[in-house]
Amino acid sequence: PSPPAPSRSKKKKRPPGLSRFGLLPMFVRPETGRFDTGGTVTLGARGDSYYEYLLKQWLLTGKREGGFLASYREAMDAGVKPHLVRHAGDHTYVGEVTEGGFSAKMDHLVCFLPGILALGHAAGAAQAPRLGGSGGSGGG
Image (cartoon, rainbow, N blue to C red):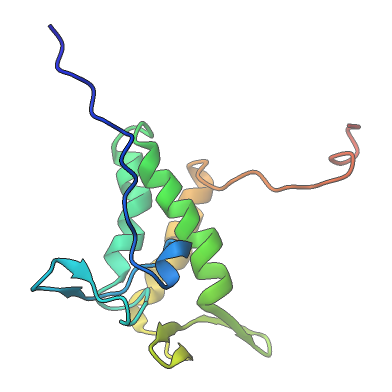
């Protein structure tokens, strides 16, 4: 006989704050094993690997573990783009969110981001753009 299928009815509880956008604080409280909900959210040191490996794990599992892809998309689309990316003149940079709000500090370890976005696009992880209207010159 086959082992019973794992129950998927339990929904994971996320810490409050930016985690609702797929972004997690960089520290875990050792006493509880839970994320420090007031902590810094960064794609730099201590945070970079989490975001980088969401996509890589999806690819390493032969694109069969959809949870990794869903978490990657949520983090990039709902988290990084609206909450961490800023523009100054002709320049774009990725900052951090601290207890005091947005911080224009861009850690050098954020350098993985363009590569992981390119890899995601090449691997088909990017969601199809919503064009609206008739969908282009090919009709509706």
